Amino acid sequence: MTDSDDVAAAQMFLQRRLEMIWNSALWRDSLLEATLTLNPDGTTTLADSFWVPQRSVLLLPAAIEKIIAARLNTNTLEVASLESYYRTDTDWLDYQGAPFEFQILKPVVMEWAVAQVLSALDSNTADANLACQYSYSPDGVTIVVGSIAPASAIGTALQLFSFSKPPTQGNVSLQVATPLAINGITYTGAPQPAATVPVTQDSVYTITPGANENGAVLVNGTQTLTLATGTTVTVTAQGSQLVFQLPNLVPAGTLYAFTLNGLSATSPYNLVWGADETAVYFFAVSTRFNNPGAGQMSTIPAGYCGGGIQFDPANGNGTSVTAQVYLATANLPLTATISNFVTFTTLAASCNNAPVHQRIRLTEAPQVAVNLRVLGKGKCPILGPYDSVPITNAEPALMAFARGDLLQRQRQFGKANLAQQEGATLLKELVENEAFQQAGEFRIQPDAGFGSDVCWWTQPDSYHPL
Image 1 (tube, rainbow, N blue to C red):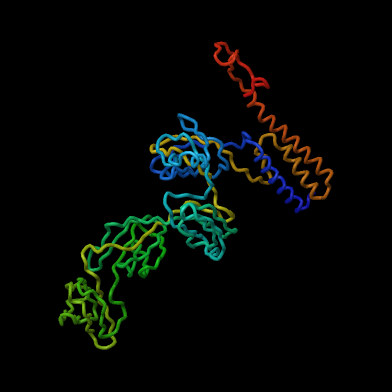
Image 2: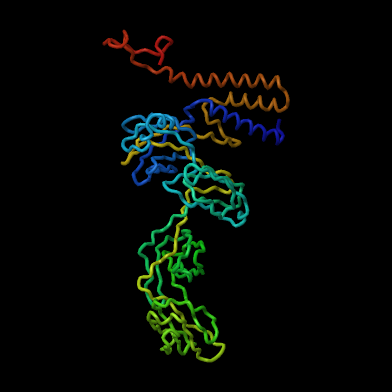
Protein backbone atom coordinates (compact mmCIF):
# COMPACT_ATOMS: atom_id res chain seq x y z
CA MET A 1 0.00 0.00 0.00
CA THR A 2 2.38 2.67 -1.29
CA ASP A 3 0.05 4.80 -3.39
CA SER A 4 -0.31 8.43 -2.32
CA ASP A 5 -3.91 7.92 -1.20
CA ASP A 6 -2.87 4.88 0.86
CA VAL A 7 -0.08 6.87 2.52
CA ALA A 8 -2.51 9.72 3.27
CA ALA A 9 -5.01 7.23 4.74
CA ALA A 10 -2.25 5.65 6.87
CA GLN A 11 -1.27 9.05 8.25
CA MET A 12 -4.90 9.83 9.05
CA PHE A 13 -5.45 6.46 10.79
CA LEU A 14 -2.23 6.83 12.80
CA GLN A 15 -3.28 10.29 14.01
CA ARG A 16 -6.81 9.20 14.91
CA ARG A 17 -5.60 6.08 16.73
CA LEU A 18 -2.98 8.14 18.58
CA GLU A 19 -5.73 10.45 19.76
CA MET A 20 -7.73 7.42 20.93
CA ILE A 21 -4.75 6.04 22.87
CA TRP A 22 -3.84 9.49 24.20
CA ASN A 23 -7.34 9.99 25.61
CA SER A 24 -7.67 6.49 27.05
CA ALA A 25 -5.47 7.03 30.12
CA LEU A 26 -3.50 9.59 32.13
CA TRP A 27 -0.15 8.71 30.58
CA ARG A 28 2.85 10.17 32.34
CA ASP A 29 4.03 11.48 28.97
CA SER A 30 0.77 13.40 28.56
CA LEU A 31 0.82 15.28 31.89
CA LEU A 32 1.89 18.92 32.23
CA GLU A 33 2.67 20.89 35.39
CA ALA A 34 1.94 24.62 35.38
CA THR A 35 3.49 26.64 38.23
CA LEU A 36 2.51 30.29 38.46
CA THR A 37 1.87 33.21 40.77
CA LEU A 38 -1.47 35.05 40.60
CA ASN A 39 -1.15 38.73 41.46
CA PRO A 40 -3.94 41.05 42.66
CA ASP A 41 -3.36 43.37 39.67
CA GLY A 42 -4.39 40.59 37.25
CA THR A 43 -0.90 39.60 36.08
CA THR A 44 0.60 36.11 36.24
CA THR A 45 4.15 34.77 36.06
CA LEU A 46 3.38 32.13 33.42
CA ALA A 47 3.15 32.91 29.71
CA ASP A 48 -0.15 32.25 27.93
CA SER A 49 -2.12 32.30 31.20
CA PHE A 50 -4.62 35.01 32.16
CA TRP A 51 -5.89 35.87 35.64
CA VAL A 52 -9.14 37.81 36.10
CA PRO A 53 -9.15 38.64 39.84
CA GLN A 54 -12.50 40.46 39.67
CA ARG A 55 -14.13 37.16 38.69
CA SER A 56 -11.61 34.86 40.42
CA VAL A 57 -11.15 33.09 37.08
CA LEU A 58 -7.86 31.71 35.75
CA LEU A 59 -7.30 30.89 32.07
CA LEU A 60 -4.61 28.22 31.88
CA PRO A 61 -2.10 27.90 29.02
CA ALA A 62 -3.64 26.62 25.80
CA ALA A 63 -1.32 23.59 25.86
CA ILE A 64 -3.45 22.13 28.72
CA GLU A 65 -6.50 20.28 27.42
CA LYS A 66 -7.82 18.84 30.67
CA ILE A 67 -7.37 19.86 34.31
CA ILE A 68 -6.44 17.04 36.69
CA ALA A 69 -5.59 18.70 40.01
CA ALA A 70 -4.55 22.01 41.58
CA ARG A 71 -2.95 23.08 44.85
CA LEU A 72 -1.41 26.03 46.64
CA ASN A 73 1.88 25.97 48.53
CA THR A 74 -0.02 25.37 51.75
CA ASN A 75 -2.88 23.07 50.80
CA THR A 76 -4.47 21.07 48.03
CA LEU A 77 -7.53 22.45 46.26
CA GLU A 78 -10.52 20.17 46.01
CA VAL A 79 -12.50 20.25 42.78
CA ALA A 80 -16.18 21.10 43.27
CA SER A 81 -19.06 21.39 40.85
CA LEU A 82 -21.10 24.54 40.57
CA GLU A 83 -24.22 22.53 41.38
CA SER A 84 -22.90 21.87 44.87
CA TYR A 85 -22.78 25.59 45.62
CA TYR A 86 -26.28 26.20 44.32
CA ARG A 87 -27.58 23.32 46.45
CA THR A 88 -25.85 24.55 49.60
CA ASP A 89 -24.78 28.19 49.83
CA THR A 90 -24.30 30.37 46.75
CA ASP A 91 -22.63 33.02 48.92
CA TRP A 92 -19.48 30.89 48.79
CA LEU A 93 -18.98 32.12 45.23
CA ASP A 94 -18.55 35.68 46.58
CA TYR A 95 -16.36 34.91 49.59
CA GLN A 96 -12.83 36.29 49.65
CA GLY A 97 -9.81 34.76 51.33
CA ALA A 98 -7.53 31.75 50.99
CA PRO A 99 -8.73 29.40 48.19
CA PHE A 100 -9.70 25.88 49.23
CA GLU A 101 -11.66 24.66 46.17
CA PHE A 102 -11.92 25.27 42.45
CA GLN A 103 -14.55 24.73 39.79
CA ILE A 104 -13.84 23.75 36.21
CA LEU A 105 -15.62 26.10 33.80
CA LYS A 106 -16.29 26.00 30.08
CA PRO A 107 -13.10 26.65 28.06
CA VAL A 108 -12.82 29.99 26.24
CA VAL A 109 -10.55 31.81 23.84
CA MET A 110 -10.54 34.77 26.26
CA GLU A 111 -12.48 36.26 29.17
CA TRP A 112 -12.38 39.79 30.57
CA ALA A 113 -13.40 41.47 33.81
CA VAL A 114 -15.82 43.70 31.88
CA ALA A 115 -17.19 43.41 28.35
CA GLN A 116 -14.73 44.50 25.64
CA VAL A 117 -15.16 45.65 22.04
CA LEU A 118 -13.66 42.88 19.86
CA SER A 119 -12.28 43.18 16.34
CA ALA A 120 -10.48 40.96 13.84
CA LEU A 121 -7.62 42.62 11.96
CA ASP A 122 -6.10 41.06 8.84
CA SER A 123 -2.48 41.63 7.83
CA ASN A 124 -3.14 40.99 4.13
CA THR A 125 -5.82 42.84 2.16
CA ALA A 126 -6.35 39.70 0.04
CA ASP A 127 -8.23 38.23 3.04
CA ALA A 128 -10.74 41.08 3.32
CA ASN A 129 -13.70 39.08 1.95
CA LEU A 130 -13.13 35.75 3.69
CA ALA A 131 -15.73 34.57 6.21
CA CYS A 132 -14.66 34.01 9.83
CA GLN A 133 -16.95 32.30 12.35
CA TYR A 134 -17.25 33.35 15.99
CA SER A 135 -19.17 32.61 19.18
CA TYR A 136 -19.22 34.91 22.20
CA SER A 137 -21.30 36.04 25.15
CA PRO A 138 -21.85 39.74 25.85
CA ASP A 139 -23.09 39.14 29.41
CA GLY A 140 -22.11 35.61 30.44
CA VAL A 141 -25.56 34.25 29.57
CA THR A 142 -26.51 35.19 26.00
CA ILE A 143 -24.66 33.39 23.19
CA VAL A 144 -24.02 35.29 19.95
CA VAL A 145 -22.97 33.32 16.87
CA GLY A 146 -22.06 34.96 13.59
CA SER A 147 -19.75 35.41 10.63
CA ILE A 148 -17.60 38.38 9.65
CA ALA A 149 -14.78 39.30 7.30
CA PRO A 150 -11.35 40.15 8.75
CA ALA A 151 -10.77 43.83 9.52
CA SER A 152 -14.28 43.96 11.03
CA ALA A 153 -15.74 44.44 14.49
CA ILE A 154 -17.03 41.26 16.15
CA GLY A 155 -19.03 42.82 18.97
CA THR A 156 -18.90 43.64 22.68
CA ALA A 157 -18.03 40.43 24.52
CA LEU A 158 -17.43 39.32 28.08
CA GLN A 159 -16.31 35.85 26.94
CA LEU A 160 -15.14 34.74 23.51
CA PHE A 161 -15.78 31.00 23.11
CA SER A 162 -14.52 30.36 19.59
CA PHE A 163 -13.11 32.03 16.50
CA SER A 164 -12.31 30.14 13.32
CA LYS A 165 -11.24 31.10 9.83
CA PRO A 166 -10.33 29.45 6.52
CA PRO A 167 -6.66 29.42 5.43
CA THR A 168 -5.65 33.03 4.73
CA GLN A 169 -2.88 34.86 2.91
CA GLY A 170 -1.73 36.61 6.09
CA ASN A 171 -2.12 36.40 9.85
CA VAL A 172 -5.36 37.46 11.53
CA SER A 173 -5.17 39.18 14.93
CA LEU A 174 -7.96 39.25 17.50
CA GLN A 175 -7.97 42.57 19.33
CA VAL A 176 -9.80 44.54 21.98
CA ALA A 177 -10.31 48.29 21.84
CA THR A 178 -9.21 49.78 25.16
CA PRO A 179 -10.35 53.42 25.66
CA LEU A 180 -7.64 55.88 26.62
CA ALA A 181 -8.18 58.16 29.61
CA ILE A 182 -8.37 61.68 28.15
CA ASN A 183 -10.06 63.42 31.10
CA GLY A 184 -8.50 66.81 31.68
CA ILE A 185 -7.02 67.19 28.17
CA THR A 186 -8.03 70.58 26.73
CA TYR A 187 -7.32 72.68 23.66
CA THR A 188 -4.54 75.20 24.18
CA GLY A 189 -2.23 77.36 22.08
CA ALA A 190 -2.64 80.03 19.41
CA PRO A 191 -3.37 80.87 16.71
CA GLN A 192 -4.63 77.29 16.19
CA PRO A 193 -5.65 75.56 19.47
CA ALA A 194 -4.67 71.91 19.73
CA ALA A 195 -5.09 69.02 22.20
CA THR A 196 -2.29 66.45 22.49
CA VAL A 197 -2.82 62.80 23.49
CA PRO A 198 0.23 60.57 24.22
CA VAL A 199 0.26 57.33 22.21
CA THR A 200 2.61 54.42 21.48
CA GLN A 201 4.69 54.16 18.32
CA ASP A 202 3.17 51.84 15.67
CA SER A 203 0.12 51.02 17.80
CA VAL A 204 -3.34 51.03 16.20
CA TYR A 205 -6.00 53.41 17.52
CA THR A 206 -9.64 54.11 16.73
CA ILE A 207 -10.94 57.67 16.99
CA THR A 208 -14.58 58.73 17.22
CA PRO A 209 -14.69 62.56 17.07
CA GLY A 210 -16.93 64.35 19.54
CA ALA A 211 -18.58 67.76 19.46
CA ASN A 212 -15.28 69.65 19.44
CA GLU A 213 -13.41 67.58 16.84
CA ASN A 214 -14.45 67.66 13.22
CA GLY A 215 -11.29 69.08 11.72
CA ALA A 216 -7.96 67.29 11.45
CA VAL A 217 -5.87 64.84 13.45
CA LEU A 218 -2.11 64.96 13.16
CA VAL A 219 -0.11 61.89 14.10
CA ASN A 220 3.19 63.40 15.23
CA GLY A 221 2.93 65.85 12.36
CA THR A 222 3.28 63.16 9.66
CA GLN A 223 -0.27 62.03 8.94
CA THR A 224 -3.42 64.09 8.55
CA LEU A 225 -6.95 62.65 8.69
CA THR A 226 -10.25 64.37 8.07
CA LEU A 227 -12.74 63.69 10.86
CA ALA A 228 -16.51 63.88 10.99
CA THR A 229 -18.42 64.03 14.23
CA GLY A 230 -19.62 60.57 15.26
CA THR A 231 -17.68 58.76 12.51
CA THR A 232 -14.97 56.31 13.59
CA VAL A 233 -11.60 56.27 11.84
CA THR A 234 -8.63 53.97 12.44
CA VAL A 235 -5.06 55.25 12.51
CA THR A 236 -1.66 53.66 13.13
CA ALA A 237 0.46 55.97 15.29
CA GLN A 238 3.65 57.10 13.55
CA GLY A 239 5.04 58.89 16.58
CA SER A 240 4.41 59.48 20.25
CA GLN A 241 1.32 61.69 20.16
CA LEU A 242 -1.99 62.43 18.50
CA VAL A 243 -2.57 66.16 17.95
CA PHE A 244 -6.23 67.17 17.66
CA GLN A 245 -7.03 70.53 16.07
CA LEU A 246 -10.19 72.53 16.44
CA PRO A 247 -12.23 72.75 13.24
CA ASN A 248 -11.40 75.47 10.74
CA LEU A 249 -14.74 77.25 10.55
CA VAL A 250 -13.96 78.89 7.17
CA PRO A 251 -13.30 76.23 4.53
CA ALA A 252 -10.63 76.92 1.92
CA GLY A 253 -11.69 77.96 -1.56
CA THR A 254 -14.73 80.03 -0.54
CA LEU A 255 -15.58 82.81 -3.00
CA TYR A 256 -16.06 86.55 -2.72
CA ALA A 257 -18.36 88.14 -0.17
CA PHE A 258 -18.36 84.97 1.90
CA THR A 259 -20.83 85.04 4.80
CA LEU A 260 -20.35 82.65 7.72
CA ASN A 261 -23.50 81.87 9.73
CA GLY A 262 -24.26 79.49 12.59
CA LEU A 263 -21.55 80.74 14.95
CA SER A 264 -22.33 80.95 18.64
CA ALA A 265 -23.75 84.28 19.77
CA THR A 266 -22.05 83.96 23.18
CA SER A 267 -18.66 82.35 22.39
CA PRO A 268 -15.44 84.23 21.60
CA TYR A 269 -13.44 83.27 18.49
CA ASN A 270 -9.92 83.66 17.17
CA LEU A 271 -9.52 84.92 13.60
CA VAL A 272 -6.22 84.24 11.81
CA TRP A 273 -6.03 86.56 8.82
CA GLY A 274 -5.04 85.42 5.34
CA ALA A 275 -3.65 87.43 2.45
CA ASP A 276 -6.96 87.83 0.57
CA GLU A 277 -9.18 89.57 3.12
CA THR A 278 -9.16 93.32 3.72
CA ALA A 279 -11.75 93.26 6.49
CA VAL A 280 -14.51 91.30 8.19
CA TYR A 281 -17.96 92.67 9.01
CA PHE A 282 -20.05 91.57 12.06
CA PHE A 283 -23.78 91.84 11.47
CA ALA A 284 -24.77 91.48 15.14
CA VAL A 285 -22.96 94.64 16.22
CA SER A 286 -22.52 96.41 12.86
CA THR A 287 -18.76 96.46 13.34
CA ARG A 288 -15.89 95.96 10.89
CA PHE A 289 -12.37 94.65 11.70
CA ASN A 290 -9.62 95.57 9.24
CA ASN A 291 -6.91 93.05 8.30
CA PRO A 292 -3.77 93.80 10.37
CA GLY A 293 -1.65 91.57 8.11
CA ALA A 294 -1.54 88.01 6.81
CA GLY A 295 -0.90 85.54 9.63
CA GLN A 296 -1.95 87.97 12.35
CA MET A 297 -4.65 86.95 14.84
CA SER A 298 -7.61 88.99 16.02
CA THR A 299 -9.85 88.05 18.92
CA ILE A 300 -13.56 88.25 18.19
CA PRO A 301 -15.37 89.02 21.48
CA ALA A 302 -18.41 87.06 22.59
CA GLY A 303 -21.63 88.43 21.11
CA TYR A 304 -20.13 89.60 17.82
CA CYS A 305 -20.92 86.51 15.73
CA GLY A 306 -24.59 85.87 16.48
CA GLY A 307 -25.85 87.36 13.25
CA GLY A 308 -23.07 86.01 11.03
CA ILE A 309 -19.91 87.57 9.64
CA GLN A 310 -18.85 88.57 6.12
CA PHE A 311 -15.34 88.82 4.68
CA ASP A 312 -14.37 91.60 2.29
CA PRO A 313 -12.01 90.29 -0.41
CA ALA A 314 -8.85 92.10 -1.36
CA ASN A 315 -9.20 91.88 -5.14
CA GLY A 316 -12.88 91.78 -5.95
CA ASN A 317 -15.16 89.01 -7.13
CA GLY A 318 -13.60 85.53 -7.40
CA THR A 319 -10.96 85.86 -4.69
CA SER A 320 -10.82 82.99 -2.19
CA VAL A 321 -11.12 83.53 1.54
CA THR A 322 -7.90 82.38 3.25
CA ALA A 323 -8.70 83.48 6.80
CA GLN A 324 -9.33 80.89 9.54
CA VAL A 325 -11.77 81.19 12.44
CA TYR A 326 -11.49 79.07 15.59
CA LEU A 327 -13.34 78.84 18.87
CA ALA A 328 -11.43 80.64 21.60
CA THR A 329 -13.18 79.17 24.64
CA ALA A 330 -10.69 78.78 27.49
CA ASN A 331 -9.86 75.15 28.39
CA LEU A 332 -12.22 73.69 25.78
CA PRO A 333 -12.17 69.90 26.55
CA LEU A 334 -11.24 67.17 24.11
CA THR A 335 -14.42 65.17 23.53
CA ALA A 336 -13.20 62.50 21.09
CA THR A 337 -13.21 58.83 22.12
CA ILE A 338 -9.79 57.28 21.52
CA SER A 339 -9.22 53.53 21.89
CA ASN A 340 -6.04 51.50 21.59
CA PHE A 341 -6.26 48.15 19.79
CA VAL A 342 -4.53 45.50 21.93
CA THR A 343 -3.89 42.07 20.36
CA PHE A 344 -4.66 39.13 22.66
CA THR A 345 -4.11 36.31 20.16
CA THR A 346 -2.93 35.91 16.56
CA LEU A 347 -3.94 33.16 14.12
CA ALA A 348 -1.26 32.22 11.61
CA ALA A 349 -2.22 32.10 7.94
CA SER A 350 -2.43 28.28 7.98
CA CYS A 351 -4.23 28.10 11.34
CA ASN A 352 -8.00 27.65 11.40
CA ASN A 353 -8.99 28.01 15.06
CA ALA A 354 -8.03 30.38 17.84
CA PRO A 355 -6.37 28.59 20.80
CA VAL A 356 -8.75 27.67 23.61
CA HIS A 357 -7.89 28.05 27.31
CA GLN A 358 -9.22 25.81 30.07
CA ARG A 359 -10.78 27.88 32.89
CA ILE A 360 -10.98 27.37 36.64
CA ARG A 361 -12.62 29.54 39.28
CA LEU A 362 -10.99 29.68 42.71
CA THR A 363 -13.08 29.80 45.88
CA GLU A 364 -12.55 31.66 48.01
CA ALA A 365 -11.36 34.53 45.80
CA PRO A 366 -7.76 35.43 46.76
CA GLN A 367 -7.04 39.10 47.44
CA VAL A 368 -3.27 38.72 47.71
CA ALA A 369 -0.64 37.07 45.52
CA VAL A 370 -0.90 33.26 45.63
CA ASN A 371 1.38 30.54 44.26
CA LEU A 372 -0.57 27.92 42.33
CA ARG A 373 0.43 24.58 40.84
CA VAL A 374 -1.89 22.95 38.29
CA LEU A 375 -1.57 19.42 36.94
CA GLY A 376 -3.14 19.05 33.52
CA LYS A 377 -3.26 16.77 30.54
CA GLY A 378 -1.73 18.19 27.38
CA LYS A 379 -3.28 18.22 23.95
CA CYS A 380 -2.55 15.29 21.68
CA PRO A 381 0.34 16.23 19.35
CA ILE A 382 -0.05 16.20 15.57
CA LEU A 383 2.26 13.53 14.11
CA GLY A 384 4.60 14.52 11.31
CA PRO A 385 5.99 12.06 8.74
CA TYR A 386 9.14 11.33 10.78
CA ASP A 387 7.89 11.89 14.32
CA SER A 388 8.10 9.31 17.07
CA VAL A 389 5.10 8.37 19.17
CA PRO A 390 4.78 10.80 22.15
CA ILE A 391 3.72 7.96 24.51
CA THR A 392 6.53 5.67 25.58
CA ASN A 393 6.21 2.10 24.22
CA ALA A 394 2.91 2.87 22.45
CA GLU A 395 4.24 2.07 18.95
CA PRO A 396 3.14 -1.61 18.85
CA ALA A 397 -0.46 -0.84 19.82
CA LEU A 398 -0.62 2.18 17.53
CA MET A 399 0.74 0.26 14.54
CA ALA A 400 -1.64 -2.64 15.13
CA PHE A 401 -4.69 -0.36 15.25
CA ALA A 402 -3.63 1.58 12.15
CA ARG A 403 -2.88 -1.67 10.28
CA GLY A 404 -6.37 -2.89 11.14
CA ASP A 405 -7.89 0.33 9.84
CA LEU A 406 -6.00 0.00 6.56
CA LEU A 407 -7.06 -3.63 6.15
CA GLN A 408 -10.65 -2.67 6.84
CA ARG A 409 -10.31 0.07 4.23
CA GLN A 410 -9.42 -2.71 1.75
CA ARG A 411 -12.44 -4.71 2.97
CA GLN A 412 -10.24 -7.45 4.45
CA PHE A 413 -12.46 -7.67 7.51
CA GLY A 414 -11.07 -10.89 9.00
CA LYS A 415 -7.46 -9.66 9.01
CA ALA A 416 -8.65 -6.25 10.19
CA ASN A 417 -10.45 -7.81 13.16
CA LEU A 418 -7.32 -9.74 14.19
CA ALA A 419 -5.20 -6.56 13.96
CA GLN A 420 -7.70 -4.62 16.06
CA GLN A 421 -7.71 -7.39 18.71
CA GLU A 422 -3.91 -7.31 18.73
CA GLY A 423 -3.98 -3.55 19.23
CA ALA A 424 -6.50 -3.81 22.09
CA THR A 425 -4.35 -6.45 23.83
CA LEU A 426 -1.17 -4.40 23.47
CA LEU A 427 -2.97 -1.29 24.74
CA LYS A 428 -4.26 -3.16 27.79
CA GLU A 429 -0.74 -4.35 28.59
CA LEU A 430 0.59 -0.83 28.15
CA VAL A 431 -1.99 0.54 30.61
CA GLU A 432 -1.17 -2.18 33.14
CA ASN A 433 2.56 -1.51 32.86
CA GLU A 434 1.94 2.21 33.28
CA ALA A 435 -0.11 1.62 36.43
CA PHE A 436 2.13 -1.08 37.95
CA GLN A 437 4.74 1.34 39.22
CA GLN A 438 2.11 3.43 40.98
CA ALA A 439 0.51 0.30 42.45
CA GLY A 440 3.86 -0.71 43.92
CA GLU A 441 4.19 2.26 46.23
CA PHE A 442 4.94 1.45 49.88
CA ARG A 443 2.60 2.51 52.64
CA ILE A 444 2.66 2.41 56.44
CA GLN A 445 -0.24 0.45 57.88
CA PRO A 446 -1.04 -0.34 61.56
CA ASP A 447 -0.38 -3.95 62.63
CA ALA A 448 -3.63 -4.45 64.46
CA GLY A 449 -5.82 -1.77 63.02
CA PHE A 450 -6.06 1.76 64.28
CA GLY A 451 -4.82 2.35 67.80
CA SER A 452 -1.83 -0.07 67.79
CA ASP A 453 1.70 1.30 68.22
CA VAL A 454 3.16 -1.44 65.99
CA CYS A 455 3.27 -1.04 62.21
CA TRP A 456 5.21 -2.43 59.28
CA TRP A 457 6.01 -1.59 55.68
CA THR A 458 3.84 -3.44 53.23
CA GLN A 459 2.61 -3.40 49.68
CA PRO A 460 -1.07 -3.11 48.73
CA ASP A 461 -2.86 -6.34 47.96
CA SER A 462 -6.42 -7.63 47.92
CA TYR A 463 -6.54 -7.58 51.74
CA HIS A 464 -4.86 -4.19 52.09
CA PRO A 465 -5.86 -2.11 49.07
CA LEU A 466 -4.64 1.42 48.53
